[in-house]
Image 1: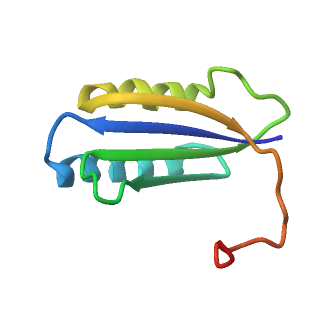
Image 2 (image 1 turned 90 degrees about the vertical axis):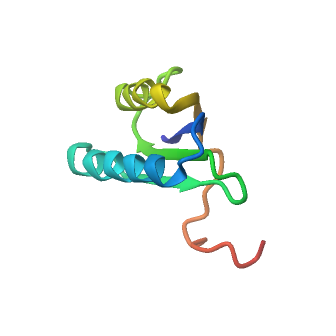
Length: 103
């Protein structure tokens, strides 16, 4: 089963560059250590204080509270602001869809 963890961070600081560099360091370390399919980080357009980390999984079972890694990341980010940790299960996938051009 494919599923996704989304960990959103709304920082309390206006120093976007500092938080962004911390997130980049964190995701780089996680990519080396984790056996996940993919880890990606994003920042929100026009809201300099919003960031998210997406953990893509493919496992037989999904835990309601997410992975241990996701819980660890969410806990570690709390020192930078408000954190929201969500779990999403894939409902439909078309293997030949690889772009958003048709949206």
